[in-house]
Image 1 (cartoon, rainbow, N blue to C red):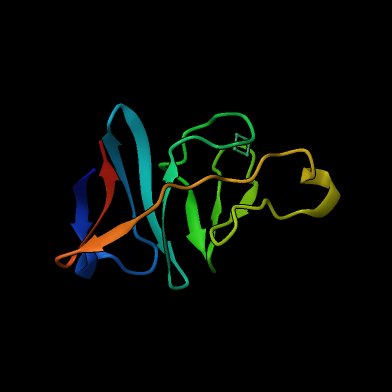
Image 2: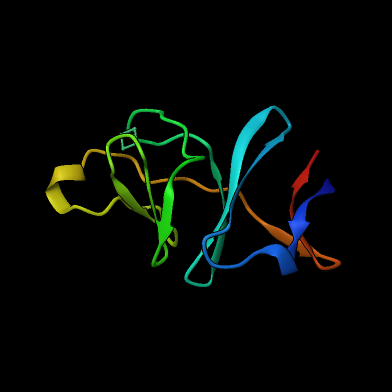
Amino acid sequence: MNFHPLDDTSNISEGYLKCFAVAGRDMLLVHSAGQTRLIPNRCPHDGSPLKKARLANGCIQCPKHKIVFRLDNGEPLGGEAVADISPLSHYELVEEGGKVGILIK
Ligand code: FES
């Protein structure tokens, strides 16, 4: 496995959201409320890109139908109204030499 850096950890702060294409996958590196996550650039509700999503209070809001997902566990907020929507997935992040990135083959 090789470390693929995405950005300097010093560049990541509240509201950070940046797109990356790694190993043929479209990803978003995001940060809110102390949580840094690498997520697919695709909403689990209806597949809309999340690159124009809103970040606040440790959550990301999809711009299409405004569903809010928690960054810590990916769960959609909204109780029974969103019970059938899959949680937001994420990729494992690694920190190395002051950079945040992922391990790829
Ligand atoms: S596609 Fe994201 S909330 Fe519907």
